[in-house]
Image (tube, rainbow, N blue to C red):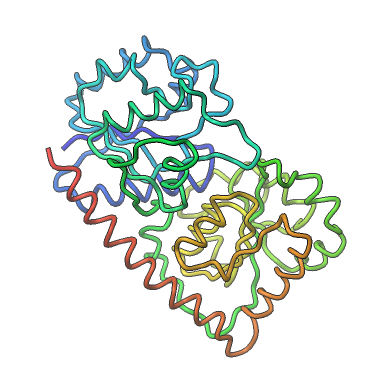
Length: 358
C-alpha cells in the first residue's frame, strides 16, 4: 500500500513528533506499506489554490497512491485563513473534493479554537462538514476536539471517531522508568494564543521574581522557536545551545527529557509527549485543549487553570504533593498514565487496521 501523508513538517516539535509517531503506527499495523510525506506548508503558499491541488492530485495518481492520510496536529483551524480559497486551514472544500477520488483518512487531527479566538464562518463550517462526509474515515484526537466539533461548531459528527493524539504513542522505546521520588524539574513554556491570558501578563504581572526563583533550577524544554524566546526570561537555563537547535533530530530532542523526572507543561503536546515518555507532570491550562485533555483522560487533579487568581499557589501545592517522599499523588499519576497509554495503543492499532483496508 502506498500512502501520501499530508501534515506540517518542521514548524512545531510536538506536531513533528506526532507525525513521526503516526508513520510508526502505519508501518507497524499495515503490511507492505510505503509512506510518502507532503508538507502542508507548500500548499499554503498557494493559499490552498484549487489549481495547485489538482496538479498535486494528478501527481498522486501518477504515483499510484492508494490512500491520502492527513494528520496529526491542530489542523482543524479557521482563524487567519479567510483569504485562502478554501476559507479555512486545509485545502479541502467543494471545489477540490469533487476531483479527489483517492480515499482520504484523517488521523489524530485537532480543533484549535482558542479562548477569545475567531469562530468558524459558515463557509468554513461547510468546508469542514463536506470534508468529514467525503473522508473514508475521520479520527479526531482525544483532547476535547470531538465536543468542539459537535457543540461549538455545530457539525454532524456521526462519522467521527475519537483516537489518540499520535504524540502519545511509541515513546516507551526510550525506557524511562517509574521513579519513587522526583526532583529534577522541566518547564515546557508556550506562547499563549488566547485572550484569557496574554504573554506580557504571564511574564511581567505574575510576579516574575517569584516565578524566576521558583523555576531557577529547572530545565527549559521549548517546542518552538517562539517558545524558546518566551520562556527564556523565566527559565534562562535551556538544554538547547541556541534556538536553532530546536529542530534538530527528533529523537535527539526527546533525549533532552532524560535530564528531568517531572515537568510543568503549557502546550498540549508538552503534556502528551512527557506523558508518553512516562514523565509525571503538572499542566498549566492556558488553552482549553490542555484542560480538556486532562479532564477527559483522568488527569484533572494535575491541571492548573492559569486564569484563576490563586493559580501560582495551586501550582506550588500540586508540585509539592508530586515531589514529596512516598507521594501517593505521584503513584496515582503513574497508575492513571499506564492504563491510559496502554488503552491508546490498543485504540490506535484497532482503528488503523479497520480503516486502512482497500
